[in-house]
Length: 248
Ligand SMILES: Nc1ncnc2c1ncn2[C@@H]1O[C@H](COP(=O)(O)OP(=O)(O)OP(=O)(O)O)[C@@H](O)[C@H]1O
Image (cartoon, helix red, strand yellow):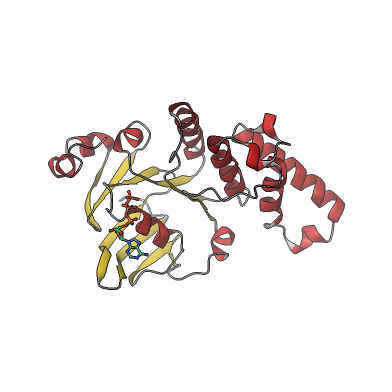
């Protein structure tokens, strides 16, 4: 890799009792790129995502962000250093409106200075939430309760909330999970736009989906690094074809 990686995973292993879910995986992510982690069922993708996003520290190995060791960093510190994440299970406040959800997320990033100027700060928060809803295509659903949004819209809302911290790195776990073909198309369009502005790493089970979307793919299999490369290289990789045989 010619440039300094934004995120580096070094020799990461994850054990659950005697079971090895990740075995000495090392991967580096270039800034500004859209990379997908793919692999068949049970490959260790979610475990890898959890390690990247700090849900739990790995059993061994290190994770570095912009050159700094972030292994074991507390969850709430992630947004502060510039990493946001969107989970497979939607994580919105169901009883609040779309706008209130994003406002709460933006508020959590308030500085002490802004808290001293409540009126200006509230206006800024309202505007920021509106801009983020616009960004993810939900402006017309601003005042709708999150519970009443369709699944795809809830996922988009969650992304707006993740963007409220102005992350330089966005991690997404199966962003199209459970979506209809139409919702999937909308989400892929959104991911493409977001990737033009920041580094994006997503975990995805469906290889076909990421082929036309990502610049680089990393393939895991049985908890081990199997291959990495451009969509073209991965499509032609004999090992990858073998493990994906019969899959979509
Ligand atoms: N908390 C846990 N305790 C025990 N085993 C676990 C735990 N989490 C994951 N595993 C095991 O680790 C392996 C990898 O799981 P993981 O969910 O990371 O794979 P995946 O590639 O995301 O699969 P899928 O595409 O099915 O979601 C699986 O065999 C799973 O059963």
